[in-house]
Length: 102
Image 1: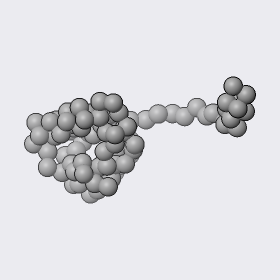
Image 2: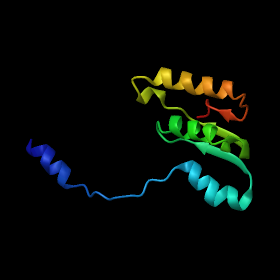
Image 3: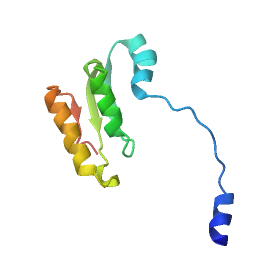
């Protein structure tokens, strides 16, 4: 439609480099400081992948508190995503990740 074409013309696109948070934490923060006291995560749905990465890489052990606002409402399978994440946390006996922050 004409409206949609005019609307699209008002936007500029940019290429950006995507980095994994676990890589940045390891290379740039934990390398220098050895411990993180608080990691607050509010990333509109990407928290499922980020927290899973933190657990699989073992970096959650170097962070005193991880507080997260979950956004399962953004996904058709959101209830399954949050259930799987909670299961992963329980399986690893993790007590420093809090998913109910908001």
